Length: 428
Ligand SMILES: [Zn+2]
Image (cartoon, rainbow, N blue to C red; front, side, top):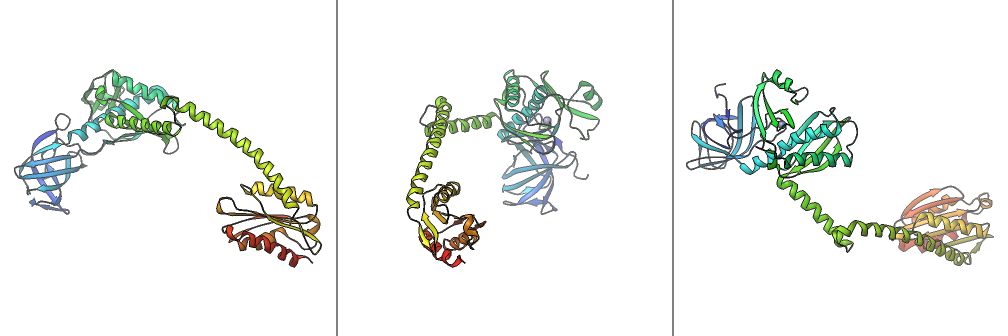
């Protein structure tokens, strides 16, 4: 109370002459602070907006003869008390000294673009999606705007396009943005949008954008909508039950966003060796080509499998009267390897089959024991476990069929060789 209230002049002006009312260093009130020190200070007048209502604070500069202080945050711990946080770049800041305070114009302009666009977005969402849309929160900073609202389903791409073009149309219409104060009752009677659950005083500030939008708001705004330049939505997502979030860019950030998308399209076009406008057709053609190649590949794989099965079937050895076949196969995955084992089993009628393959520097192993041999103590699961340990892997399965993976393809031959010895030991 003894510090006095701060007179905020930042709606009309970006600079003001002020008196330093209080300096706080490390939580203590001090009479002065020197170069390099980080301080908080209170002024009798400031053009710097303090973060509130979803809008971030201004940045700014404080100067006086021989003194320069950078302001990087302004807060409002209680109504009408603005606390500036800054670093003394040069000189010594003294209590009761006279200074010039300036808010950073380019940051403020970018924030104003996003704040005015937030109001346009709010109204556009109501127009496109319906009157059930209510603001649930927002964040306005120099880079982008974020708007949370009540809605029970995802907003479709078509709806988002509509919202974006409603906002851009109001920007192109260059509607005036006016601010005025009135009573809360009067504001309600005018149908001004307010934040549900927010406490408002008797006097409220209203932002009126042409005949398009009317909202209770304490933030800083453009003078007219055209200053926003361009509005680009950048994403829509869920942030809870019945709550959606959209993010958007305006002005230079919107242009930068469009530029980035253009570069991505160029990059894709270069990759598929087409002009950007021909890129979608070219990608579609390539996807079709991949589909055809995949079908062709499947036929070739089946033929290859058949040939391999023929070769392998001729290499069956007898171990104490049991046909055993252990061999290498070329198979892209476990499924096709299992398919080959099935074919071989049908072919030899009764026996033990072990196939190994090494796709992508890994080992796949499949073992099979025909039903008649399970009774004599042979077990595909035990067999594959034993062999997998040789190729640094693991696996298992049932008595008739099992599979395993391994990490050491260099020892596959060793594992396959071991199959004969293991079967020999298993036969009762
Ligand atoms: Zn607002």
